[in-house]
Length: 155
Image (cartoon, rainbow, N blue to C red; front, side, top):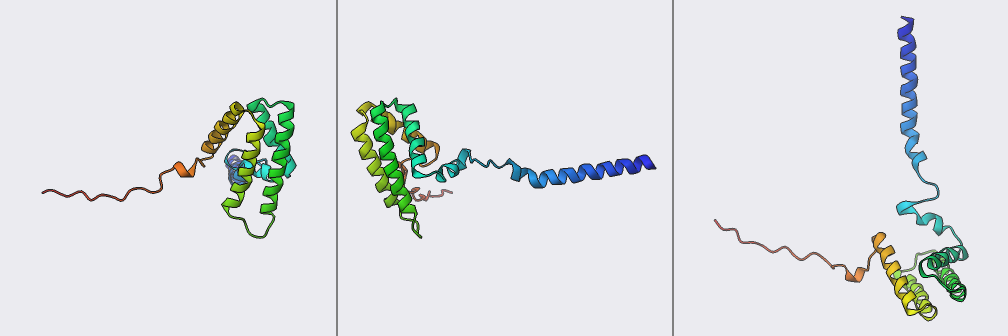
């Protein structure tokens, strides 16, 4: 009888451990740094200067910028980051066109700094990134599905 009692106690302990693991397992599986789909959360907490450095480093890696280009691109990215931060600093979230204005500024500045070949590489990289995020160019997406056409039923 004591063997049965010991096995019952062990089973209770195992069952309790499984319940704890099931309850806290999902919470522990979350990535604090934020990666994958939610990976931008860590970047959102960066200062404009840190985001600009991150973006400039990415551009250096993809476009092989000269030291002069790197310095100019960093300055543009810092300015754009400060403009974005100013837009998001208010009580209400600005409309999409305000953010597009900052992006337009950035792209115009890049066009004066990068070579035509680098600019094409940058556009291709951006398009690839947007596609990976599922954002794609909304202007190229079909507006709506066509209305269903009725098919006559023959008897």
